Image (cartoon, rainbow, N blue to C red; front, side):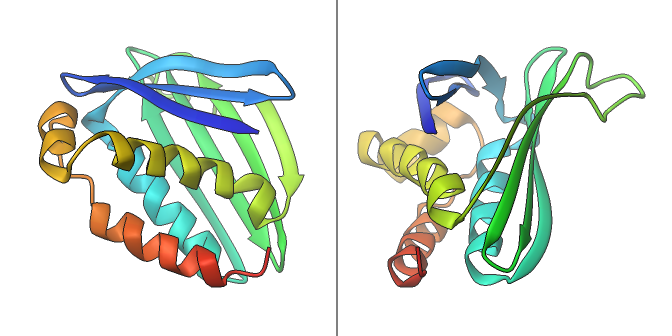
Amino acid sequence: MKIDFKNLKFGWINLKIEHNFALIIDSEFSYIYNGLEDLLDSLYQLSIASSIETEVIFLGEPFAYKLFFSKRKDIIQFKIYFIKSYLGNNKSGELIYEKIGNFKEICIPFWRGLRKIQSKYTQEEFNKLWQTEFSYEKLDNLSKIIKTVKV
């Protein structure tokens, strides 16, 4: 699985997810639900907990994608749901992708995508372009933990 965040501008960022050269997501998302910060928090929880469920919303207009992670011992189930209109009542969405794997297979690609952002922008530049806070300090802490995680 390959994760790429690019084209950061005016509170929007493009998220691209590919698996075995098949494109799963390639869309722009707004800072409104701060999916990046939620993703960072989810990755942190997945790195330290033995059992957890967490979800991250990436909001477009009016659609959204919900990334769902479920960890039991060393196995992580990852699902992506497409939500046609996040402003409506049906926020469950349509399952468009599912993968089961370990921390290395599921979480490391997201961590690499976030680190790529960190390598392109200073904290101040990023927060200005994203128009909300994103913690490089939390990302650094996650990076330290990842070095100790059994993968």
